Structure formats: structure tokens, C-alpha cells
Length: 420
Ligand code: HAM
Image (cartoon, rainbow, N blue to C red):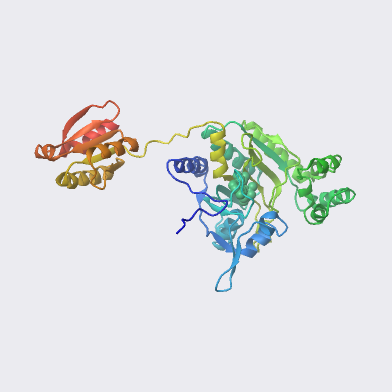
């Protein structure tokens, strides 16, 4: 019988590499936990209409990439392609916004699913750590989130990333711009699909990577020139706060995100060592999303950073994440009696907080010592009948190679003292 493989566009996280993913999730979430964000977890699937309405029918994410299905009970669901709509849905459902404590600040970490054409850095199952600050319109909140993401990347040692910043305007000024842009685009020489896009999502046309399209786009009206006074002032303040915090960013007036819910502040973190899938994270303000999914007006802002791409970025910069050896002590019993005694000691050491492993399977000394070496343990405890008769075990320092007997009842204290 043939064996199974991970589905196309997916991969498994296996040791030792998986430790890097844990370290990245930890590094991204640490600044959030430190800034008043509470942890939220939502289901891996939702009503398909939540994403259709929230992320937008015309986006690639909803129209082409969503894993949508009907259950045996007739519910129309979709595997979540992103986290923002779900988190806002959950906050509304739990009435978090009514507790009189705005903004509601939440962070999350999990798996997301998009039926995309797989390539390096682009997967059908990927992982994000994200943050959403719900219910407050305040440029300091936008700045806070960008500063925290910057801090997260820097704490990992990343340097070759850039922050692209833009404002997409609001429900007053964007429609005016949209129409001006459409009028301009309709006069260009473009293919059928792009013509359709002009009518549905004209801002995305600006994002077209083809040189012949880009050439025709010179002279296109720019949103910057259409921003209303409110949006302009808001954006200026976000920029000033970032500058005051020492965060370097680039104004990118062409930055359009792949989700429809954005208003005003939008940003992307790009890494220069990743080739075409260079966006390691992105986000922005979504003042209208709550109303789009049936809630009250709740201006909000957030981001999500891609864990898979952040790991690739670390590799591109040659950064070794500090992953401490997981095992401190490895126990090797010689014989049945030693097996019982050492297994008891292993449990005691673990209870005392010492990371300990055991040579399972009754292997000989040579094989067991090989495993001890591989585990990265600082100490090995070895015991045979003779040691036990003397009420002791041999404690071997794997770095110096020195070995000495330690009394059974002194072992835990001795090991802890040596490791300290
Ligand atoms: P997004 O830009 O679609 O935004 O995704 C955020 C990050 O997830 C990307 O920058 C990328 O690193 C990673 N990512 C997305 N798709 C893939 C994929 N197929 N394979 C690997 N990594 C991927 C959002 O999802 C918004 N919900 C962010 C947000 C939160 N906006 C406001 N709040």
C-alpha cells in the first residue's frame, strides 16, 4: 500500500525546525501581551457569509481561494482564510464592546487556509499571529500596533524588513477617488479581466505588476490628492507618532491590500530576502467592518504577521533563533532494578522543574548514551546494580566528560544546583 503525503501546498512542522515556529510565535506575541492585548481563540471555520461580507466578494481571497463547503446538516461554512472577521464576530457576539472598556484589544495565533497556487512562502495552510484593537478611532492606536510589530521583528534580530505605509481614505473621500480612477482607467488599453476589475475593484488595478499596464498607469489620479481633511490629519498624526518612536517607514501611495475592509491607515511589512512573496505581515484600519457584518459602528485597527514567512525571513538573514536544548538531564538505566529506580528519579526531577528524558526500550549502554548525546542534555545519570547497592547513581557532565557518584536522595538538589 502506498503511504500518504501532506496535501499539496502544506507542510509539517517537525523537530528541530518546529522549535523556530514556536519561538517566532512567542516573539510576536510577547510585545502584545505586554501592551494590554488579551488572548482570543475562534473556530477554524465560520459561516461563509461572514467572509464574503467582511473580506469582500470581489477579493481573490473570497472569490478564488476560500475552502467553502456545505455540511451534512446544510450549513454553508468556510475554513477561515484570515482572522479579522472572525475576531470581530466573536467580540460582537460576546458583547465585549459594551463592557465600557474601549478599545477591546485582542491577539490570536493560529492556522489559516487559502486555496492559492503554492510556491515558496505561499501555502494553502499557513500560520499567523495577529492583533486587533476594536472600537476606538485614535491615531495612537494605529501607531501602537505598527510599533509593536516592529519591536517583534527586531527582537528576533530581523533587520532587512521595511514598513510600507499608506492611507486609503474613508467613506467620504474614497468613493470620489474611486470614480476619478475609474474614469481614467476606462480610457486605457486593457484586457477583459482587467476591465472587469475596473468596475469591481479599481484600486487593485494600480497593483498590477505587468510592465505594459504599469506604463499606462503613469498620470493616474492618486488617492493622496483626494484624501479629505479628516483623513489627511489622521494620517499625518500616525506618521508623526511613528517618527517620534524611531520607527522608520516608507510612504507607499500604491499600497492596496488584498482585503476590502480597509479604511485610512494601511501598512505592510516586507522583507527583501524573500523574492516574490515578500510580505511578512500586513494590516490596517477597518472602520466599516463591524457594520458590514451586522454590528454597530466600531472603528478598529489590526494586523497579522505570517509565521511561515517570518521563519523564511530569519533563514534569509542567516539568523539562528536561540532555541535552548529541551532536555537538561538524560537517564540511562542498566538492568531492571535500575530501570525502576531511575524512572522514579526522572519523575522527581521533572516535578522539580528539570527537563528530563529517559532511555526507553531497555537498550544497551552504547545506544542509550548515543541518545543522551543527541538529546543535548547537560547531564546524564547512569546507574547499574552496583551503584544502587551503594545507594547512588553516576552523574556525568556531558560537557567536561567528568563523572561522579551522587547519593540517590541528594540527586535532585545536586542537579538543580549544577544547572543553576
Ligand atoms: P494578509 O495580508 O492577507 O492580512 O495576511 C497577513 C500575512 O499572512 C501576510 O503578510 C503573509 O505573511 C501571511 N500570509 C497570507 N497568505 C499566506 C499564504 N498563502 N502563505 C503563507 N503566508 C501567508 C490579513 O490576513 C488580515 N487579516 C490582517 C489584518 C488584521 N488586518 C487587520 N487586522
